[in-house]
Length: 95
Figure 1 (cartoon, rainbow, N blue to C red):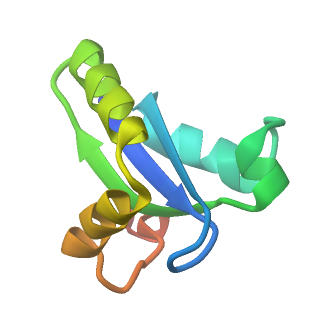
Figure 2 (figure 1 turned 180 degrees about the vertical axis):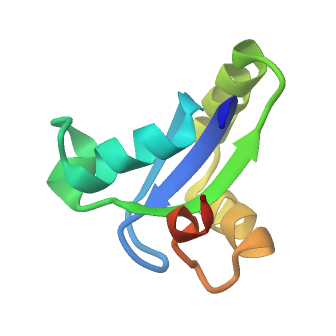
């Protein structure tokens, strides 16, 4: 499932958010969830995958990530709730 992807992690519903980009979403989400990488998501317990967008090129994904990172918090929450109103952990659906 290697494909450029922009993703949003949350600590809980309406909690702390993290926006990232990767070419291997299952591996990257596992890294966040298991805490093998030091940083923001480990420090603040941000492990729930609540949004994912797949792109055809990494350049497109990086551009989208940079744009979303500049968004207001309310816009990010609206983006999540449009496709995932229950804030389910989408990691459980990746198999």
